[in-house]
Length: 546
Image (cartoon, rainbow, N blue to C red; front, side):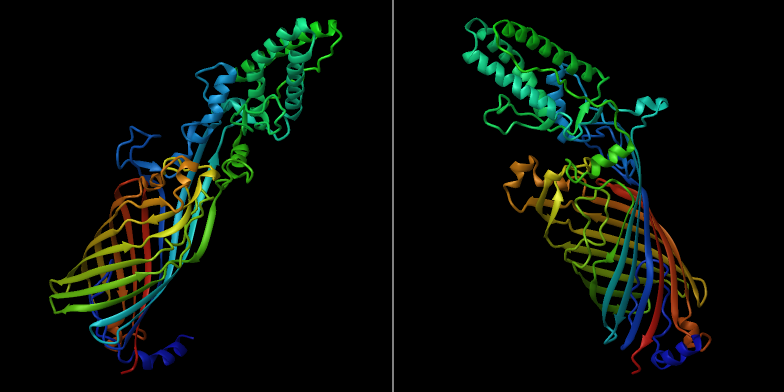
């Protein structure tokens, strides 16, 4: 097979370009000969478990640039309103119904371990119609993977400290209670208007005293009354509540005691009405409270229940594979001298990738899916046969686009489905600088070390429909918090090339193989991944035959 390939490719590579300075890391500014065709295949793997964070409302004392696990803002010793602000109305209603002003709703411990990897496998073709001008197209296939391990509350005896104080409000569990409340309060209202004259004040007093509490439980258990004739119509609450206090908690005891007093008062009044020949319907259903707190499976159910508040992903490992953002580029050779080579490149990045899903809290897209225009200047400063330095910079202008997002700050990633809105996104422009010394060890091997700086301005957001701000209760710009990125990487690489040996007749095929590794050692702005990036690249040089 190898001999067949050589026979087929030999006519095309007879005019191979002259041996070039090897690129161990970063770009170079050496021109291609007229008619040259360069095919590049390989892959880039980025991997991260930590990020450089910044102070925020959840972690106000955090030092800017401190390393945190990627799952930090999905985790809490006591998952509650601080991490899930949409549960605040429920907590407030429970405080009022229990009389516990300091009551804190607690789902329990949540610890999410996250590990992300992004693998890009581009096919790139460069063609030089003239010595000064070259054209390029790069088509990447991208695979993103998020490994997630969720540890929720442990219901075992040995781990009581991890448990919360609430359980599920199962669908239909409070239906009988709500029917009993509706029936009893209707009866009291009717007796207060048309019952025995001597008992009317007592009926009205009992109705006024206990209607707010009973209707509070009514809305908590199953939602607001929609029947205009219901005594609980107009009493609003946070129900139907996803969670209720467990029966043996302080809040559960308080709810049960108060309901017991209401039932006792009602039964006492019922006895007085019975003496007058009037039978009141019973109020003895009780308000059913859960007996068990949540565990890890319950937590996953809370995250992923499509009929629930979050209606998102269950925070399990997720893999996405697809086309990335295709790049079209052209560069022009400004300077081509023995001691200095300079190229100017213009690149357009097309919106062919796929963005992450707003309903998957840990998804990573295959691209930005919007158009960029990038201008790059590449310089090679040559100090001799064995040493040259690449100094380059890129500036990118990113165009606006519309997409659906859950509107929430980055440090509150578990946003409810009701926060979905179409927003106009203006990704921040970026600047990248590279400084890479290269050493040529012989005619085949080269090594390099590099310093790489990257800065991207914060992304700006606005609502496509301004009315969404009142519906959601937050400005769209909260999505832009923590999106400014400044990072620095260092790396090293090695290249093996047969280009020169092929030109001298000592190699069968002209190609270059480059391996490099970079590590992000400094980051500021928000959640800047502390990632390691490995690249393996194979380049084959061909000529058109002229």
